[in-house]
Length: 119
Image (cartoon, rainbow, N blue to C red; front, side, top):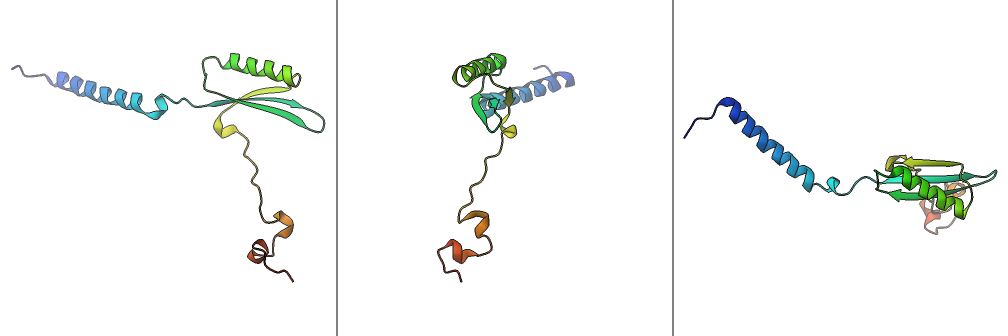
């Protein structure tokens, strides 16, 4: 048996750690489920607006996807005023629905919410 030089030992250790890192990357969930992007197409009107959202995971052809969405929107509704590509964090937050009467009924407490009597 021949003795290994310190540099050879270090290289073998580095190879082993690299192999472990590659295995971690290829077996992780993120490697196979890419982040979604959302294509938002809008048409503003004086009193309202029409919005179409389309989710896509195709990063390589993002421009093609946006042009397809724009064509589909144009065919159904009309010429859009803006087209944006958004990430999950950039999506508008959904408005929370208020149960139990909303703002006008505040201040009556739990009795009102559960069908209690109001004086």
